[in-house]
Image (tube, rainbow, N blue to C red; front, side):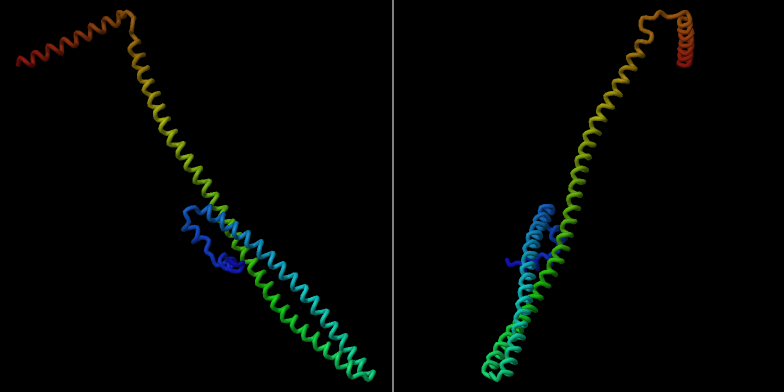
Length: 219
């Protein structure tokens, strides 16, 4: 594939559309950036070569025009000296150099067009490259955030499960301890006189309730 074909493909490419269809957008944009960078280096080198060729053409055209002027002067001298034969030869040389100058002018115009095309392509390639690098930066950030979020969610799920089990176990231990404490409150302690009378009063109350039930049953 020629350099101009690659440049046209890159410039006309829709980065977002390509990434939307890609299975691995990060890998694709990395390859795109590498291709753009390689193409940009190549086209800059070609542009530099065209600019150097342009300077060479300009120098040669100036030299040819100067020689055409010199041959015109020689033709005039030959006429002044009555040497028409030499004048004719000098005029032929002047014509030859002028024709060469005209050809160089056309070549220079063509070279100017190539340089302008290279420079325009370089600008568009750099814009595309900037957009691709920004896209890569965004994708990398999204990837990092996604990995971080997934890791956090996984840790949270683990923490929620383990914390819930720990809290449940701790709560169960507290209940068992409270039950044990309640059983040990009066363990090994002799009842007081107040406790004895309280039980008697409770027994009498219970007996009255029992008697009342029997009477109600008899009726």
